[in-house]
Image (cartoon, rainbow, N blue to C red; front, side):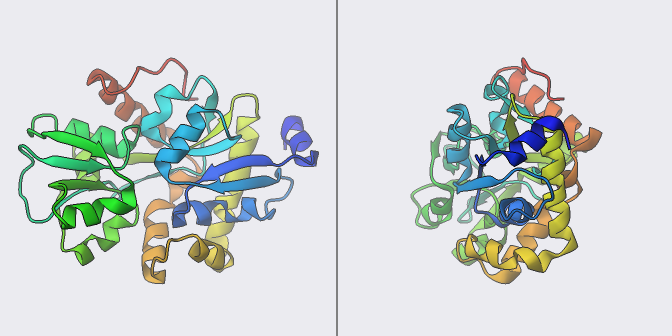
Length: 281
């Protein structure tokens, strides 16, 4: 472990860690949050949904924070990207849901946030589909709003992939499938950032060890995951973890970085985000 991280670990002040209560985050960070990673610094955990986490990062409120890759261009002046702990993958993209509608011309669409990967993918996919309006709605309220007819379509993420049929909704598009067809790359969803003054390499190693501990003994984190899973059924929780926690959670690797760079370059070309001014690695 580096001298800077060792000094932090000896310090009585915990690092602040802000993540979502979703099973992929609680599974990945269980060991770190409970002091089970040898020599890693103590952390104090705050839970919030992704739109709130993006705002917390913009305000520099946390030492370590989960954000959407769609927010990265606004955050890299203050934060560095860790190579572990995030969510990338295949077959795990956002869905565009409707109550039977087969196109979006003139549609009102509910989305979970504007500085999200889901939003960027939706805007790239829907550029010529005639959407009338887009509103930000808390993600847990999107499916009920579409079901009740208050919106014509909804953009959903996370566990909604598994539960939307119970609302009588259908998937008009899987934006993860669309992205993979366009690029042959995994879809970059959530990133883990650390303040630039911290030792990013050492923190990446600590987070990687936490993820590895979860893989080694999934039962150890089960109670913690279920306690924060917003009453998801255990089989949905297991499916969620298997989908979002994978080899990219251990290390982004060249393919992971290529996916991030491609998404943000295409979004910048479409004037959806600023071009990166800080290197990713």
